[in-house]
Each structure stands twice: as structure tokens, then as C-alpha cells.
Amino acid sequence: MLEGDYLGMTLTIQDVDKENEAYFRYCAKGEFRLQRGKQSGLLRYPPTTACPWTRDREYDWVPVEGRGTVHSYAEVHHAIQPAFKERVPYLVLIVDLDTQKGEPSAHEALRVVGNLVTAEGELAPPEVVSTVGIGVRVRMVFSDIADGFAIPQWTIDEDAEQPTSPWRYAQE
Image (cartoon, rainbow, N blue to C red; front, side, top):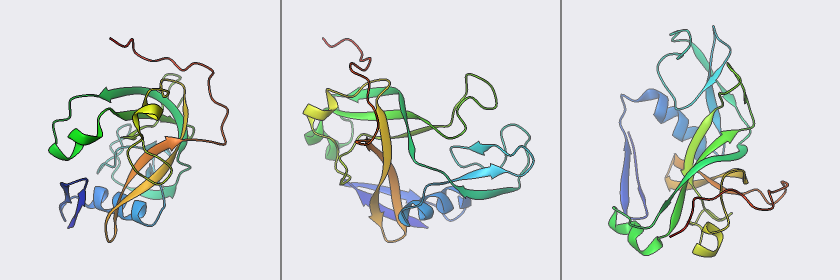
């Protein structure tokens, strides 16, 4: 079992959840790995017991570059978890990975969820949150939760060309 604390919230991966346990252990090593179905040859996220295209249960864990583009986001202003209340606003991002974009069909991509954080893994401050929107280029960083347990997060990719004005939801 993996168990750790993230901003005052206990996160647990049970022993029976072998796919997620392996995924988060790779993250703890600073490695972003996804399952590739042996029959389909396609990567998948989130980790699952079977390929969503072929239902094949055989797969390999393969390294994947943790870079992509913000596909969508939620800007949280009213945190439910007490530990997050002092950290609003914060962003939860859905990121289209550069890897396998447009497969198996033109409108598909591997989309990975994570918070917007600084390069050091802290939730991004409000002045950064207000600049990030759809189309912003990000890269993955890992936040350590416990020994052998880390979660993937997203930070602005300083080396990538960024849109001049990323699309953002209208502000009230």
C-alpha cells in the first residue's frame, strides 16, 4: 500500500490497485511512464487493467515525455479540502501530451490531469494562475508524497514557445 500526505490530505493507493501503485512508484523515481497495450501498441492514461481499444490485459510500462499543451482547466476559488483553502485560487489542468496526439483518431490525445505548480512543485501563486489558459505549454514535475510515492503536476514550460494570449474563461 502507498500512503502519504499532500497538503494535509491523506492519499492512499491500496495493494490491490497494482496499476496505479506501479504508476505512482515510477513517478517517485522521477519517471513518467504509461502502459502500452501489446496488441494495440497504444499508450493509455489513466492506468487500467486492460486496453480500452482491444481489452487486452498485456502491456509494458514505457517512458513518456511529460510535455504538452493545456487542453482545459478548472480555476478553483472555493476549496472543499481544508488544506487548500489558504491556497486559492489554484488551477487543475487537463493537458494534451505531445506523445500520441491524434491517435487512434484525429480528435484524441493522451490527457493527463494535474495541478499547476511552480518548478519546485508548490501550487502556483495567483499572479501565475491568472496567466495560464488553454494553449499554454507545460512540462511535468513530481511532488513527493511519501517514500516511493509521488504525484505528477504541471509547471509552465520555460523553454517552449508560449501563446501571446492563451484562451481563458471569462472572469466575473
